[in-house]
Image (tube, rainbow, N blue to C red; front, side, top):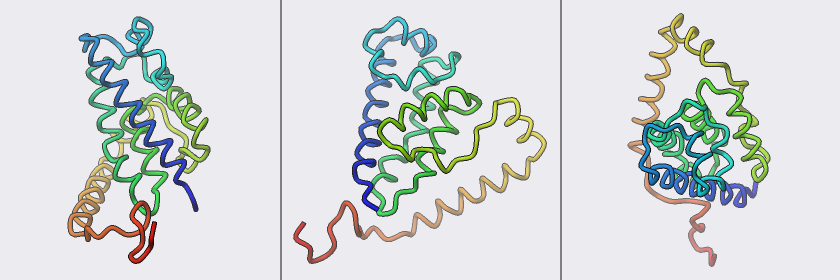
Length: 174
């Protein structure tokens, strides 16, 4: 599958997120909600994805949550096989957790350029349901942490050899 244009669009989106983070931080108002900053600052109006954020997220929290949500995107976008679900789920969980309506707005925005974005993810639940489920089943949290630790350990020993996109195959002229 030739998904280089989708990868490019997602990489450009990461750039937009970084620029939005910089502008939000540049307001010098870490306790102000991003929704209020969006209204007050014309420089933020070009970042339509900010409209999907929960109205209670302040500038400082946005910085933390966005950094967590997009931290793996550059590496994922350079992998030979694109893990579409991982890209979407990190943003869904870290930036839009408990905000299903905002997530829908965000997905609609991204799908203008990347039609498949978040198509493999289940419906997002509201914060109340998520908190109740986690409280009732603590073993699910433990197993998720263990699987994350195992994945990190197996990745640590992985080869650094680069194969496939965006690195040409040995002997190719491209």
